Length: 359
Image (tube, one colour):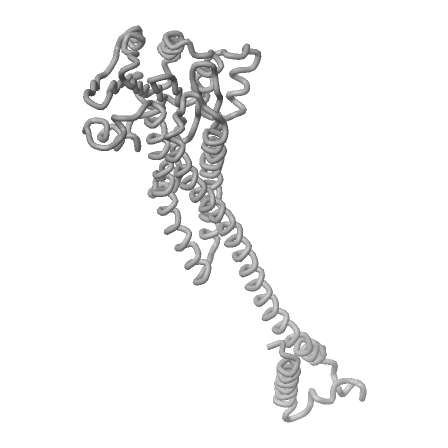
């Protein structure tokens, strides 16, 4: 849904009004939970939302992953169960919302964007992902199934590593880290495309090339809107004292900040390279046009005196009628004389052009 259509749809509604702004990407909402500590793990699907509240336990970490945002009533019951501000759920349902971080009394609310690249259609797709971090629990909201969180799920299923030993804040870090790592993978794919563009521009650029570059710039801008705000979010998590984030996990967030900084720098470099490519194409096209005009000008300049000569001898006034009429009409070698004279004019002009470095 476009921003204009969204604005029309929400026009006149009070703050906190729940309107899903995206497209239905799954048939029905699914709720998967991981409840774990260092020694135990429970993984299952939940149908009864009221059961979620009963799963909260200070001895375990509860990860609730909700896939699908189109069933507003069901999400409203989740909101009521965890006493979430209606404005938060409004932002969760607004898939066009920019990444953000908000701190509430009992939880942190974070929006970020997961990205994917379709090489066949040459398009970057963006998924709206929301996090609610509470004490001993984490709720994630996604638009569709299948994501970079699968690796984290596998890590939870085994007892190795620190993920089962630490709290919900560390789990949120690992999920954010997976999203940022995926940024890097996508950027590497785009880097190959950038190199191909450079090769084509240096070889034989054409109109199709510049159209592809303009399309690619559009996709890069889409990527920038997803990646750059997350840098500020991670910085805020580190800078501001967050009661729900343990100090021992700050070192991981700082490492995540380094990764997102690198991704942002890469995206900005891509933007600059794309703009440079467009400028190179324009300059190359202008040079080709100038060369074409130069050749046409030289040809025109050569044919101007020839046309003048032909025009004079095309008048065919009878020389017997007046001594001022063309005597060459009666010359035995008149025709070869005129052709030779025209050839001399062409040679002289070419010599002049060469001396002036015009050709």
